[in-house]
Amino acid sequence: MNIHEYQGKEILASYGVRVQRGIVANSPVEAVAAAKQLTAETGTGWHVVKAQIHAGGRGKGGGVKLAKNLQQVEELSEQIIGMMLKTPQTPPEGKKVHKVLIAEDVYYPGESETQEFYMSVLLNRARGRNMIMYSTEGGMDIEEVAEHTPHLIFTEEIDPTVGLQGFQARRIAFNLGLSGNAFKEMVKFVESLYNAYIGCDASMFEINPVLKTSDNKIMAVDAKVNVDDNALYRQPKIADMRDIREENPIEVEAKEVGLNYVDLDGTVGCMVNGAGLAMATMDLIKYAGFEPANFLDVGGTADAKRVETAFRIILKDPNVKAILINIFGGIVRCDRVAQGVIDAYKNMGDDIKVPIIVRLQGTNAELAKEMIDQSGMPILSAVQFQEAADQVKAALS
Image 1 (cartoon, rainbow, N blue to C red):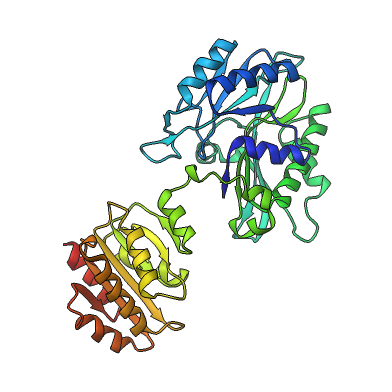
Image 2 (cartoon, rainbow, N blue to C red; image 1 turned 90 degrees about the vertical axis):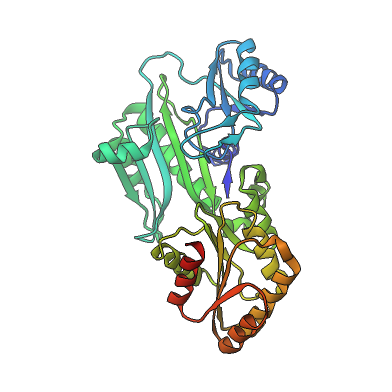
């Protein structure tokens, strides 16, 4: 589950991480009030107006602006709230901005130059360990840094038996070229950031940039946080931060009815039981020369109601040109699945305007194929994996 920048900063602050302070606003009027309050609390004269959406690259899309007075705070908030913000991480049409964060200006003059760093905590799946990734090249797309100057990216793996060690935090501060008070601040920052990552069951904490201020303080200017969905049952406060307006509406609907659905960009809809078989089915579609339109795992049951619900969700994607149903009848018998498909097709009538290919294997597979072939419904049946792929290819050709 993704959360907004201001929510990520709230979590960080609760673990002792110094953050760029800010107040969220839902309208230009609230934005001006937030700016006044922030000035009273922090003394900041300028304010940063930051669009709050679940995507990076907001500055490039015009979603982050500097306001030098209250009038500009109001004007910029009015421009940003309600806009369709397009970034490299949003859909082509962009994402609608519903709120902004009014943040303090932290790039004030002082005894030294400001510096921006990149830092993230995430799981290295190949090694089965958490790691801290960091770079002196903060404020930039880390992908570009990795491609053009990979020697400027450092990693620190964390042994799960002992956790983050003090010498590792000090090594990070040293590799970033810090000294004096900034060095001490960075060590504390790293330790607190890692504690936040572990404490809230995150799968990623990305801070870009981490700022060394002109008076040698270290703080998080941004916060991109992803929390492990499987751990939300023990993180009720974080679960309450969910903003479904930022999520794919089809995926939200599927989740509410207990279907595991992920929207993709292809033309062949998939309905499968089991995540492994679903991945194999998607590979099969690609080998046939097409792209899957979704990942959809209906789970261990596939009765008429569940199949019909899955049909309706898949067909909400206008790009779907065919649907491939691939069920292994282990827990559930194939004939019951076949009956569910037939009943769902009858109930939906003319709502289904694309070819349906059904491949059933397992208990009573032959009976299931016979039921589908004799149903009188325009449903194509298959027994072998390759046969199903050929049916898809024929239907779309």
